[in-house]
Image 1 (cartoon, rainbow, N blue to C red):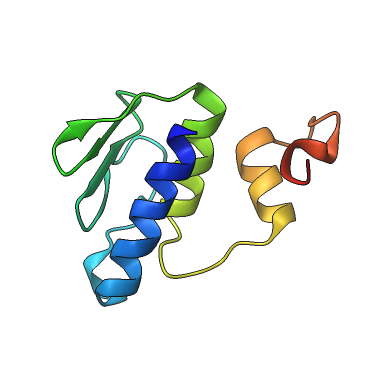
Image 2 (cartoon, rainbow, N blue to C red):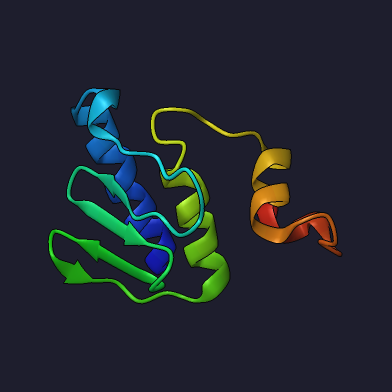
Amino acid sequence: MAVLLAAIAVTAVVDESSSSSAEPASDLGVPIHVGDVHIDPGRHEVLVRGQAVGMPLKEFDLLVALASNAGRVPTRDQLIDKVWGHDVGSLRCLTA
């Protein structure tokens, strides 16, 4: 549930501002800033308007994948590859 709320916040900020306000990460260690959302992959930390948002690892990875492409919609296959990798097992993780 936390990733849904954080993703909604990222989407709302991207919709309200120009895409130039998003700072995509060049790698997984670089913090990502999208409006009021600050994601630090190195510290596994998400702040929305300065308040910490806790979430499980895969939800965090999904948020990083979405926020690092702010303003663009990745395909299901791109998300699976980036978050779960090639050894994903059941593909129901994004369709259930």
